[in-house]
Length: 246
Image (cartoon, rainbow, N blue to C red; front, side, top):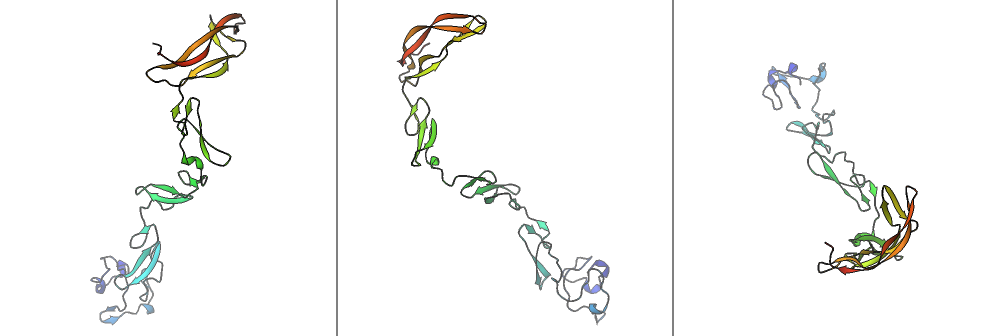
C-alpha cells in the first residue's frame, strides 16, 4: 500500500515504514467500518485478498507465503536479498570450465579442476587418458615407447643409465665436418669433409677430458675470395682424461 493511501489504522502495523505498507491484512477497519477492497476501484499498489504470492514479487526466486511478513523469497543460485534481486559474489557463476569443476580462488576469480583426459586453463584441451611416459623421468634424454608400449629413455650423447642421469666417462665421438680457417679477410674451408674425433664426457680427480693423441694430415682449402691452398690439419685420434689446460 503506497504512502498516499496510508491511513491512521496502519501507522503502527508491522511492515509499515512511514511511507508505505508491504504485507497482507485480512480485515481492515476504518472508523469501525470494515473495508471491502473488492467493491471499490483499486489504486496502484493495493490488491484485494491475502495472497502475497499471487504476482511475481521475487525477481529471481520462488515466493513462499509467510504469516509474519506476508511472504519470503527462496532465491535461485547466484541471487540474494529479500526479493532475490541482488547478485551473490560467486566467481563460479557463469564459469567457462568446459570439462572440469570450478574452484573459487577469491570473490572475483576461479580456477578449473579438469576431468581425467582433459587439460588446459579452461579444461578445453583433450589429453591422452594414459601416457606411459608420465611414469618415468629422463634427465638427459627423451622418453620413447617400445614395440610393446613400454616406456624407456633414449639418452642424449654423453649420458647413460635408465634415467639418462649418468654422464659417460671421457670418450671420443667420431664426426665428419669441414675444417675452417681465416686467411686474411677471406674465410676458407677444406674441399671435403674430414673425419676426426671430438672429445666428450667427464673426468674425476680434477682432470679434464681432451685429446691424448693426434696426427697431422694435409688438406686442400678453398676461400671466399677465389684463392686456394694446401695446409696441414691436426686430427684427434684418441681422447682421455688429462691435466686441465690452464
